[in-house]
Length: 262
Image (cartoon, rainbow, N blue to C red):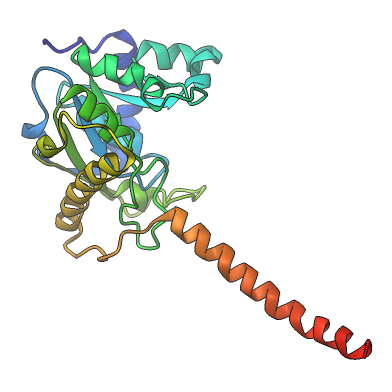
């Protein structure tokens, strides 16, 4: 299937965004040859800064295959922002649906039309203390297995040095370098034509995240931790620590009251 034309809105966004990106960030971009020239595909990208969607979009815009990011459906209804989201072909995610596959119907349709859909499998900026990729959500795997499209793992680093995770002020000087490494497609053939159970989707997602992490290791020149940071598990552990601390704080008082009652 032929590629879709970039279109007015995406070119307009590029005119606005590229000049400041060129000024603020140097570029070390590798792996453009792994971006498919034709047909629908997914890019699965790590997320470590509020500005890395712009920096990454700049990389892929230069390949000629512009990314269509997933965003909350409500953003498509708000004035100029909504017009820009619709005009640039971004993908609305209808989280209110109870059918997980239907929630990604627009992404599936886009891939089948020959588009590139860019996924941040982590779902949010990484909370790993050293900014390695976290455990991923299964949306990218779900769309990939439904469409059997190529999944290109992409690692990026550097936008987080310009604007650290959850920071409000950028570190402009010295000038930062945005590193991108796009790898060859992830082999998911072992997962094709099987029931998309939670276990299967989890395994496929782990394969995708492992590929992203390997590329980030190459960029950073160091090994990632053996255990991937899991924010859900961290929340459980935090609740356990809080409960244990509260128990220790209240226990002496309870024992004192018990002694007064005897």
